[in-house]
Length: 136
Length: 136
DNA sequence: GTGCAACTTGAAGTGAGGTTTAAGTCAACA
DNA sequence: TGTTGACTTAAACCTCACTTCAAGTTGCAC
Image (tube, rainbow over all chains, first blue to last red; front, side, top):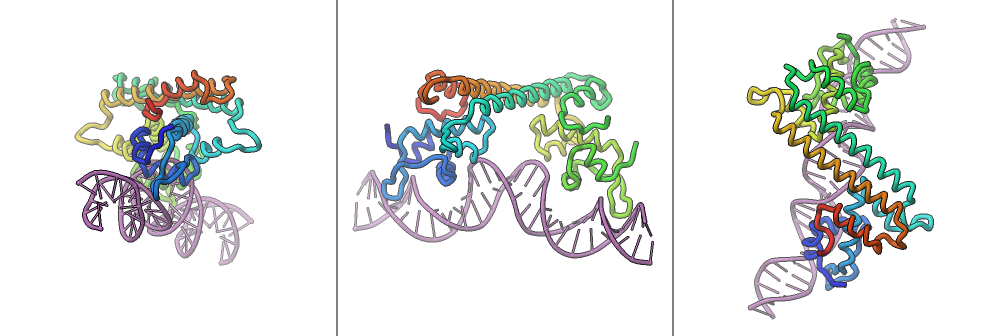
């Protein structure tokens, strides 16, 4: 357990000091002491920050991430069901992005005079958009 | 070419009237007339909205989408290179999401007493995070 | 002990993408 | 002709995740 000041945590985490203070205000991390006014962290905060970053990637808001760190109704961790749900959601988003990427590649390759006139584009556009934006 | 009022466009596009007015202010769409004060659209606006939605999915900001609709230096469309670049970027994001989803599934399945103690979790966590958040 | 870079604070600002509000207008129906 | 409900506007407000600012304090090197 090394003691780190805010500049060291900042440097090792890639987060700005202002972000660390902000996270502290939100209850996501805590400094475990002060040297005078100055925060001192022990290096477990880096693991915590990694978990926060993971939570963000997993699509959780800072509020949600914060509540994962505190027991709620006796449970300290997300239910497995909830985690699998979120994983499925992420995979859905991944597929959407793939489809959109394929569409962009088509646009880049298509030689139709205008994409709006290309039947393949029209079909892909309809397929890609979950929202029912185009007329029936 | 049907004429639509804002409520009809809203209903068929799934966007709120306030959003349509906001898009108009940003120069993304235009009503082609007024009946009294009230906007009238023709149904080509729905295609336009579909393109805007596509642009958003493709990771472009409304400003960028707006500028795609107006000629810039004689070109009306994004360069093919730029499109392929964006497609690659999206595929990269898709892979990231996949990796995060896999990590969540592991967490859901892992029986280690605490995830922080699970070596597989630690490794996946390190692998998943591009940011160099964990100590070396 | 003195200087100053690096910290501290609360409050306000940022940017993206809208939404809400207040006050007013008006097309359409009875 | 009167009512009403859907529209109009500009401006303020919202959320999220931070960043910046102004003013004040202080650990540490010299």
